[in-house]
Length: 327
Image (tube, rainbow, N blue to C red; front, side, top):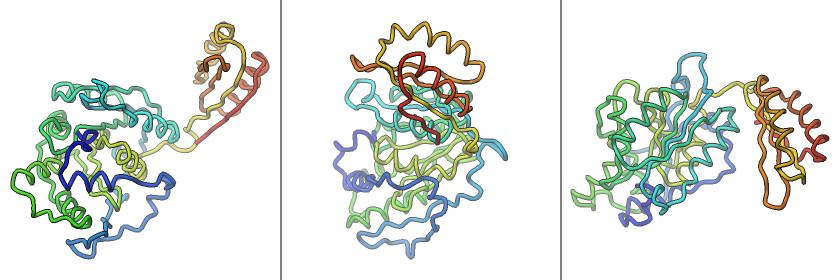
C-alpha cells in the first residue's frame, strides 16, 4: 500500500515519496490558469520534472452539462488503517475541502484490502453520491488491489497505461535513476502502478506538473488517489479545476458561538433551536471542550439568517460570536 511505502526499498518508491511533498500555499482556483507546457523530449534531465497536465476544457463536466457536485463520500482502503498501524488523515483533509468547496460530505468509510468489500462499497457510494474519493491500495505489492478491484466494480478491463509508464520512467531519470537497471520482476512490480481501469467512463487525469501519478476517475464520480497524505493532498487540490463545483451562492456559511455554560444546560434550548430551524436548512451543533466551555455551531446557506440566530444564541447562552466563515 502507498501508506506503507516507507518500508518498501525500491528506488522508484523512494523517488515517489520524495516528490510527494508540496506547498499548501498554492490556491486550487489558480491551477486552471496555469500554462499547459509539454515536455521538450521523452527523456528528462536529472533534476527536471515538468509534465504536461490534462487540459481542463472537456474534462470538467463529468456529471453532464449544468450539473454540479452536491454530495460526496470518502472511501479509505487499507488493512493498516483498520489494525491501527496507520492513522488516517486523508479523510479529515477531504472533509475540510468539501466544506470549503460547498460540498456536503455524507459518509466516510474505512474498509479492508478485500476485493469484494471494495467492489461493493464503490458501487454503493457512487450510486448515492455525486463525488466519491478513494484513497489507498495503490502500489507495487500483492495487496495493492484498488485498481483491479475498481475495474471490476465498473466492469472495465485493466490495461497498462503507456503514458503513466512514460511519466514514471521520466520521473526516475529526473531523480538520477535508470529505469532499465531493474530486473523483470522489479519492472513488473513497478508497472502494477500503471495497470489502470480502461474503457468507457474511465478517465486518466494528470493534474500536477511535478507528479507522474494520475487521478483515475470512473463513471464521472469516483476518483482514485494514493494513500500517502502529502501526495493525496497535492493531487486533491490540483483536481479542483476538473470538478463541477457548486456556484458561490450554494456554499455554506458557518458561525460559531462560544459560551462557558455546561453543555447539559444548553441542551433544552439547542434542541428547540434545532427543531425550529431545520426546516430552513440550518444545522445546529455543540462541541464541548473539557472544562473550557462549549462552541455552538450554526451552518447553512442563508448567511443573514444564521447571523441573526447567532446573536440570539449568544444572548441566550451568555456567550459571544467567535468565528464566521464562508468559502
